Image 1: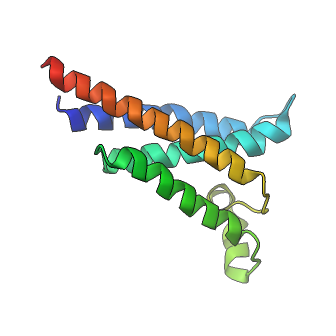
Image 2: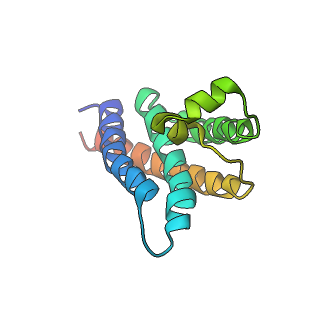
Length: 138
């Protein structure tokens, strides 16, 4: 298996693990529900997008660039939550729309986006290093 295939396989496996955890965090009921539903979800959201784009662009430069872009785009999406327009409201009225666009602007979300992108970067770096070691072992 080539380095790119190894990196893609690990990214895909990671997404298959993080997606159910992300959905679980959105619907969790119990102690710390508010934090699990909103803040943890934001962290996992960032990590997912880092993995998703790395799956398609598994290159060394992308390890740093992807988390930066993910943070920028999700920050813009957060700012979009300040606008209430018929089109955005219609999109947010669906589960998928709420999951992708959110519903309420919250300043503290940026902290969780930074944390998620930092963890995403660390994960991508580990995936890249592991795939590099796999290539060298062959």
